[in-house]
Image (cartoon, rainbow, N blue to C red; front, side):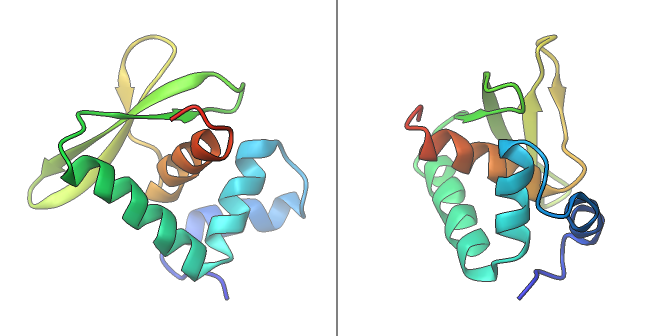
Length: 109
């Protein structure tokens, strides 16, 4: 059952039709599986709740990236450090979740 929260991303992965790179496939997996997306979200939140300043994930090129959580106006935002050293907010949270899970599945965290 697809998650209703990530409408932009759902459209993107639907257009890929099962193709794309490893990150695209992980995003498609999370968008289409509420239970797995919830499990990854809880694992990500647990790291930050235990005091982590950032967590490590993997981006499109297989590079390690830092992901941090900030509170803004009472809402959690996830930021990903780009190759330029700047922090960027993904279009939807599921992208940060997928990078984190990709890193975990490749045992880099």
